[in-house]
Structure formats: structure tokens, C-alpha cells
Image 1: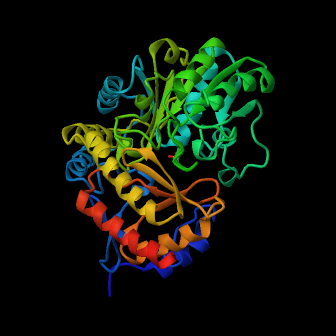
Image 2 (image 1 turned 90 degrees about the vertical axis):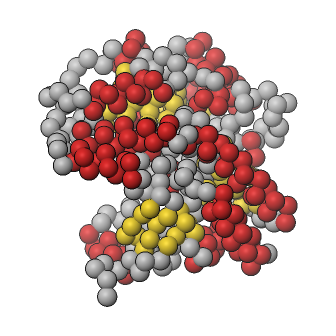
Length: 429
Ligand code: PMP
């Protein structure tokens, strides 16, 4: 017997006491009870190689000892007061973020989730510009509140039946299924150019901001070609529209750089963060340059945002990311992973496209007619789980296999994963 209630009982209680929008993976889900770097353990002690990291959350690995120590030190000293009193972790963390975020981004607001970060970023954009309209990208995901759900371009994640008005959608850069039937670079970034038409036809022209993920996570690891965000920014600048970059899923080394927007050489006006910022503890934030941030003057701090414990966790996370060069490690291992997947693709036309940067890699599964192969992906996920490996899935058709492991994963782990995947793909062929 174990001290745990076991997965059947967890599922039963979940059905009885948790609102059903909180769904879970797998036909026979396991109860996870322990994590150690790139590994997770269920209630029977069985080990799993975590290749999804809770959707890009634990970038430094589960229970990284240096982060755990920092949390323990803080949690046993002072857990929380409120931002109406002075504590120092919050300001040290903000200073740290000013140093590592692109360009002139300097002043930060702390909250407890990615949703809140995006909600706050939209408010700041409105306060600064005096405008209320927004543009978002198709297939983007920005959160669960009424506004952030309305900014989300994936119907699966839009439960709301009466979305907030004043939001228009622009095409995303989905090269594998280019809506213009073109190829980069001959396309001349037709998808980015379309933004001009959206501004002129679907809005009053007075738009506060465009919000975009640099690489769309839940949208299917949609990875824009080089030059895409430069063109977007040019068009926005022409109309005095701010650029909000949502780094909630892509930030903190995940894509081989500290932030994914760095791949595109563009400075956001406002940037939002969460997930990996606290390596699993609830931290969200948005940051902006002083000129914009200073438009937010009326009281409005978050009670739990920037509290000493989560700020200590985030400070330790940033230290670990730099100390162990995790962004570089993600870049190198990401190349290795993509090579391995490309080898598999040669034998398996089921893998239609491989994309992403660093350790944020997607493999889109397709039938011979290029239609989405979602059912096959579900089978693969089950087989991989049975072999002790957890991978993710996303995309509007749920047919994109997602690899977003803790950045401390090793080459040997990736070899193991690729070998198992090769076996499973053979079973399906
Ligand atoms: N933005 C992006 C890009 C996300 O991936 C998510 C979560 N999947 C969110 C925002 C919402 O973050 P949270 O769940 O922390 O509210």
C-alpha cells in the first residue's frame, strides 16, 4: 500500500469536485507524486521522462535543488505580506528582468498567471494610447478571462459565448498551410502584409495594440519565418499601434534564447511572461519601457503578485538559467532533436512538418492527403506513455506532437525518446 489515494480515486474526486473545464490527458491517467529534473514519478514509483514540462513551465527541471532551496529559505522566513509594505525580492526580480529582457523594457508589474499578465498588458496599452481596440493573431492563445479568451484565436479555448468587442484577427504565419499557397521567401510575407488591410477594414484605425506569441504554442508550434515580426512592427509603427509580445510559453530559454522574440530582432512595446518565470510557482508579469509603463498610475497592485516566495523562486530560476547556460543548451539539444525527427520523417510520411526553435519543437502529423492526423497522435501519446515518456499535443486540429522538455534533458534522454518513437511509429505504419 502507498500513502496515495491512487489515480482512480483522483479521477473520481475530480469529477465530483473540480469544474470539468480542467481536463486531463490519457485514457488511464497516472497520479504524479514526485519530480526530479527531467523525470516524473507516479504513485507506484514508476519513472516517466517528461518531454512536455507542464507545457513549458519547468524549464530548469522539476524540483531543481537550487530553486527548491531558495523557496524553502524564503517560505520559512517571510511568506507574504502585501505590496503595500516594502520587501526586496520584488524589486530585485524586476531589476533582473529589466536586464535580461530586450531593449528598453524596464518596468514590471507582477501577478500570478499568464492570463493576468496579458489582461494587464492590454490595460496598460489602453491607458497609454487612449485606445480600446485590439488585434490578435489567428491560432494565438492568451488566457482564460473574458478579455484574454476573446483575444484567443483557437475556438477550443474560447468557452465564452459573448466575446469582448473591438478585437480583430490577423493571419498568423502558418507556412506549412499557407493560406496564400505561397512559400517563403517568395511570398514576401503576405501574411504580415495582410495586417495593413485588417487595420484599414476591420478596425476604426485607432487600435491600442496587437498581441502575439513569437511562436504560437497551443496553436501548434507555429514558427514565423525570419523577417515576419520586423514587417509586423513596421506596419504597427505606421499606425501608432503597440506590439505586445506574449512570452508566457516561449520565454526563459525555451527556444534557445532567453526570449523567443530575440530570434526576430524586434523590441516589443510590452512583453508578458509567466509559466517558466517561476519554474512552476505561480508568477506572472508584464514589462514595458518607462514611457509606457508610467501611464499606469492609479492603484491596482495584485495581492499575490510579487510576493516574497514566488519572487525568490523566480530570482533563483533566472540564476539557474544563466549559471547553467540553459538557453544555449536548449538551442543545441533542439537542433539534435530536430535532426532525429527529420530522420524519422524520411521513413514516416505521417510526419508532415517539423518546426520550432530550441526545445520548443512541433511535429505536425498528417494523412497522405495532408489532412490532420489527430487520431494517430492520440495513439502515439498512449504508446509513448506506456513506454514511460510524456509528450504533448496541440494545434487547432490537435494533430501536432509537441516536444517541450525541461531544458536539463540530456542527449541520451532524447535518443531514448527518439528510439521509442521510432518503434511506435513502426507499429502505426
Ligand atoms: N499565453 C500563452 C502563450 C499561454 O500558452 C498560456 C497558457 N497556456 C497563457 C497565456 C495563459 O497562462 P496561464 O494559464 O498562466 O493563465
